[in-house]
Length: 181
Figure 1 (cartoon, helix red, strand yellow):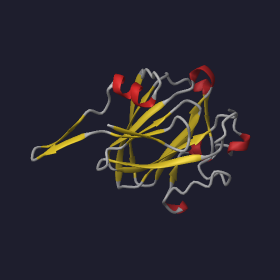
Figure 2: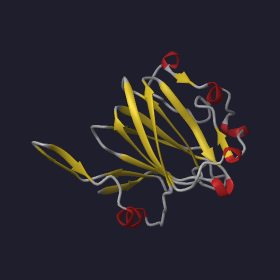
Figure 3: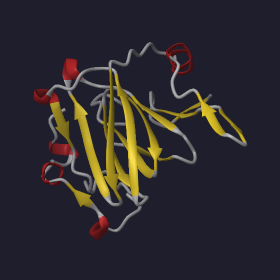
């Protein structure tokens, strides 16, 4: 496994070691001890989630606040997505900045998004199965979000606006400046 910290402190791109032969491949998708050592922090994941989406589906940008904040380790099992993390830590020197990573079944890359970040993804392939671990349980009262097209974030989602499929809930999220963080 190789681990690369992004320009946003605490966000890591993880490339697992993949063993391939004529039968297919094998990889260790998660090892608590190696993961914690690689990122220099103890993270205890308590929940695994999975979603299926079609091309153009954009989920996000979501976060949990306070004691219910969540760190996530995300990956794509099938298909390809553009995954985005936005720093929403008010005292951070990179507040309001984002990092985008392409995750796919081919590259098997994983992305660690720590607490204090909004997170979202858009499906670039015909379909995608997206999987992620959370270090805290979901709490509806603590959920928040930022509109995907906030001009201050200037995120390039790699698809035209008319190709995006946004939920009613995500379509009315506030811009970062007005989000309750």
